[in-house]
Length: 255
Image (cartoon, rainbow, N blue to C red; front, side, top):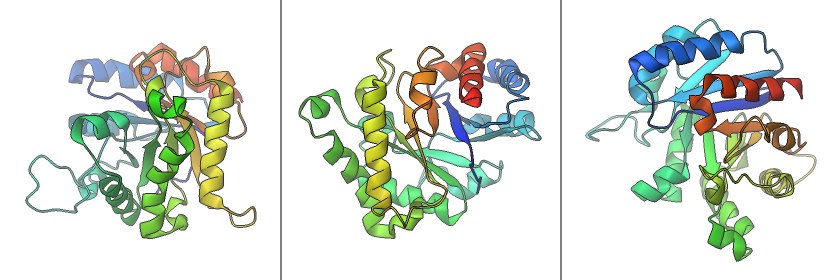
């Protein structure tokens, strides 16, 4: 399991890339962040390119992972990819619960909890995405929605399963819209998540990272990632532009 002790920046390439594009893109990112020592940097790629990420990023300061994982370890599940298969490529993390998957493939909180547990059982780092829609925010129930997403995992496995894990607060209304949450909104929700899991000041979950995702770019990264409650960022579109991704990592490295 990757021990993350600094601020974290993770790129989510989503369903983008090719062998040709990745070769230059990964190499540019690798050389661009080579001397950044105060930020932990990861890149989550489509399954077919895990071998390429492993080849290019090995022996660098970048870890790599996938954008999803199966809840089952093996069996007759056509098209699924297990945690053990990810481990064959030395993947360190996997995104679970991203709203794009939950919406398109109707993933339940129970399924996401099983995926989270499967990753922890194999000593991989889950990157759990939680967040509310614009309607839910306008109704003032964003805390209730996010709590429900987290409490399904906590109820089944206890709060300590969140040790050495990452939770990304991603308001669904901000993803891909160029409308990031305000620093106050991000601060409030990340603080709420931390308090929800820790529940007492003297019994904090060790190694838990709470990051922000949703239209993060080099213009707002300092405001968002500089918050004491925010441990870094999950970058979508910005991770497809090596120069932009490197700038974001540079900003977070300087905090």
